[in-house]
Length: 94
Image (spheres, rainbow, N blue to C red):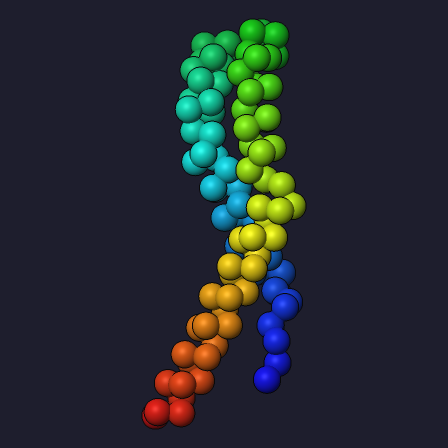
């Protein structure tokens, strides 16, 4: 039996998008505070919202580490392996 350890580029993109989505959902309150700070500002956004921006970047940094990426990648590989075995089982039954 062949062990699945490689993801296609499209699958890697899916995992990366999931990582970003999870990070954004966990940092939602901070992101909303940053958005509120940036409303009705143009040039002064950089100076006025530095604290909020720093908080968002720190939060996102906690949830977009290589360890988190590896966890999601491993989960994707397990799901892919399970899907393939179910597909083979269905083909054998047919």
